[in-house]
Image (cartoon, rainbow, N blue to C red):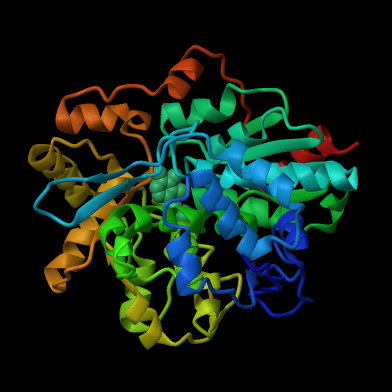
Length: 461
Ligand SMILES: *Cc1c(COP(=O)(O)O)cnc(C)c1O
């Protein structure tokens, strides 16, 4: 398969283009924009058909090689894919008489889809840090699941330290424990504020010249290294649900419903489409933080400040950082504060993406009815995705397979499942282990100077 040399520009267009390695290590671009690819290579028909029966690690290798194969020794990239993707990725058909599927991205070590990106990214970064003989501090804001996935992925990696900021009152106990019980090179800080406050602190630290000596980098979806690995599971799910048509040599389109917060997952899907995957529609399903569906409807963007606290806590985002990349992909410009400087091609955007908001009340109702109808336990994020798909199907009559994404294991949110369904979701082994461990984390106000002092005190050498 051909190897591309991708170049990345900043969504703010005020700094030079860079290669993938540079974008990966930098996290944020120096002009505060997000690095995003200038254009994507495309798999041709034969290549797409040829990848259909690959195992997940081989598929990941094929997709990542197409994107950034020029940046890493092939054997290393192969080892990384094999090592990162050592867990199942089930695609489940809910009922025989319906063409609806659930893609489960919750079987990794921290039971959320964040494992897919974090595990590949940690290994790629570890490789670069070792090559360059330097050290690095990964600074990450989390709305719930990124922190655990990043902490787990980087745990024990030499020369890389991790500091995670989470909103003190908006993560579940199990989500918190995934960050606060590891120790070693992983430190979590509870911020008395919302996810957006955590994200703002992190962004400010990145552009603070006083902190340059800390070698900061980001593992949030502001880092383009998170996005590329997230295009792989779209291929994986596609091949599972289209087995029959692929057997006949045809590539039929499908629909994906993506529960969305910071829109990194959706951006992974859009990259897959750019690479040639036939997707007729993406559904961007959000909770009550409905700034994106409103943007698509009215062509006017207004972030929600502060974000609304909903059951699907990892999606409580009032200004998704990846929106700047999506706007960029469709020919527009959005600056780092969310101002639309140039409107993207809204018609093309609406052709590709249907976006809708699912309330907490609807989320509860969906968890209940899906359990009743299919004997299937969804948690709140997956329920928002499912609700988005159902609403889409109310408007449009489609014959294509529809795939809804479940992004977390219900056992991460036992209280809610117990309350709605009256059952205790079984605990996966990875979550069981951390239950007994001791927690350790400081609590801080959402104050930048205090945060900066903390970083200097704990990480400056
Ligand atoms: C992070 C997360 C989301 C939202 O994904 P984005 O890429 O931020 O849109 C959805 N569900 C779960 C469980 C998550 O952890």
